Image 1 (cartoon, rainbow, N blue to C red):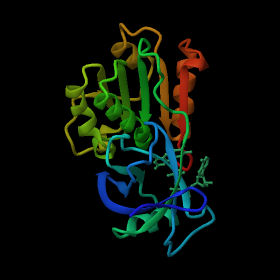
Image 2: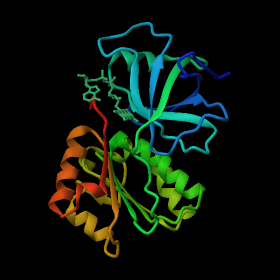
Image 3: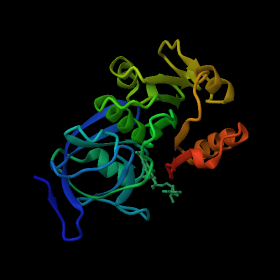
Length: 246
Ligand SMILES: Cc1cc2nc3c(=O)[nH]c(=O)nc-3n(C[C@H](O)[C@H](O)[C@H](O)COP(=O)(O)OP(=O)(O)OC[C@H]3O[C@@H](n4cnc5c(N)ncnc54)[C@H](O)[C@@H]3O)c2cc1C
């Protein structure tokens, strides 16, 4: 059962975990029916049964990767060797957590006449998985172009389901790109190399005045933000989320 703490935080439990890419795990938590959020928002997840901790503490900000209509609350993270992630990775089904939030403004704009161009780096895909599945479910009229950069297909969380979503939503286009295929054991016929001006213009030929969204490791977010500015895109039309710690 989920419940609410005195501070208004949600007390929840782990119900399922699933490896969604190499060293990358999605965690599903119970979500009470009345608990709502906007696709693209994040939570503060606190581990309440920690066997160890470090100077960063037992809480991390994590984007909600599930869409609002999905019955569970899903987050996904790269399993690095920090106390928080060691405890999370060993957590049994039923482990109790505290969830504060939702928070954040990385949500799809209202004006459907303006397309959304999304640039996701690695685990920065999480808020956009939520957004893309919401758009398909609600049959939103927005045109959505999702560029998704990883080193290898093995590293790309949710790759197949994000590709399959094109069949459900005619307004959605998915452009995954791999930057390190020499180290991959899988076949790949899609884009390769970093997201850059040339790649964007190949895919966005008839796209007028989009809003851009970027999430991922800070260096990637900064680099892509600069690239957009150099292409003449105003900061008013760029929304970003930096995933610190990577
Ligand atoms: C709004 C938001 C959404 C996020 N969503 C996700 C997500 O969906 N999946 C995911 O894996 N990660 C996400 N992150 C990042 C996440 O909070 C962790 O920082 C990250 O997973 C690294 O955790 P860690 O335990 O491996 O390392 P940590 O022990 O947390 O950090 C390693 C190093 O990074 C530094 N650091 C930590 N946080 C920050 C920060 N915010 N800014 C700058 N430096 C920092 C620490 O000081 C430390 O030196 C998000 C962050 C934010 C702010």
